[in-house]
Image (tube, rainbow, N blue to C red; front, side, top):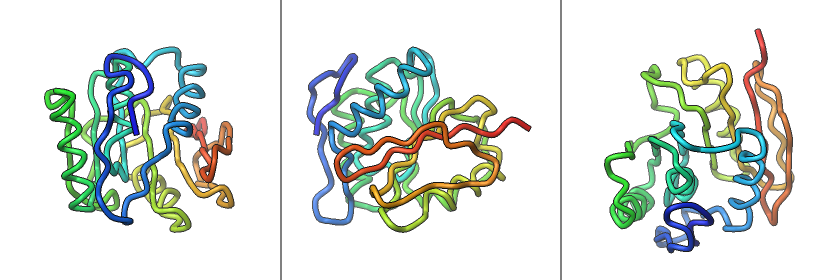
Length: 182
């Protein structure tokens, strides 16, 4: 695994040991960021959230491309260690907020991310459940982009959100969602 573009381009990421965490393939991450850049233009100055963060590849990719701040949420201890190692290796501590907790345990939002990445365990339905809960807790900005990665066989439907596009990449399916206009 490596950073695809930006300040840290081609730098390697540490992945947690074991089978618990499934890192997003470089090719899938490249596809997702290409989809987002074509829609938002640049990550410059954005606040991003990397939920079910694992090694933090999504959030670190966004920071490498100019995001101002990244929130990382991960509950697996080995993944949190890898995540903290990656953040320290890239010198990104001042732009990173790591929460060693369940996404489902997040409380009321203090700030709304511009882009939210979710990579829950495949086949769990956790992405839809988490998005619904986070929406009720004020985490979703009216113009936010939300990416949920699932297995190719899974679909996403969450009340209050429009699926803008779906793209298959390897074993993964990327869903880009936006909040529905009121």
